[in-house]
Length: 176
Image (tube, rainbow, N blue to C red; front, side, top):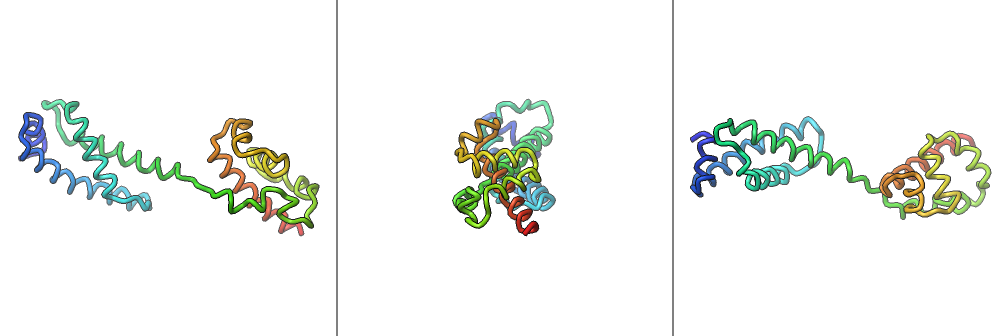
């Protein structure tokens, strides 16, 4: 049976047809996801995306119009689930701020480096990084205060701080 026929039978209550449909779709979806992940160089688990797609198909099966082709409807769901997985990875930016505690205050990071030396090199940073480093490292504001000040998420502040401190350390090493 073709997928559309299996889906029609499943929607009519045929559990065996539904089981065959899901089994066949899982094989097709694994191939699609593996190919897409290979192109994206991502470390996402294929099976996670396949299962999310099958769940979405199950939950949305009533939205498929049985006079329309099944393949495009199913591939649209699979594509959206794949994109959702890629977005989740992109948002997983975790910079453990504790690793940089000793760099947060320029005077604590290196007591031999006067605050004025840090301030002298600060203009070499991009605007947003400069503002974040200034706010946290020199002015003593918290991550949440800085996030509100610059209308950024706390994660974005941590990333900007990490990048800014790293760039500043490189600039200062080169100036010594």
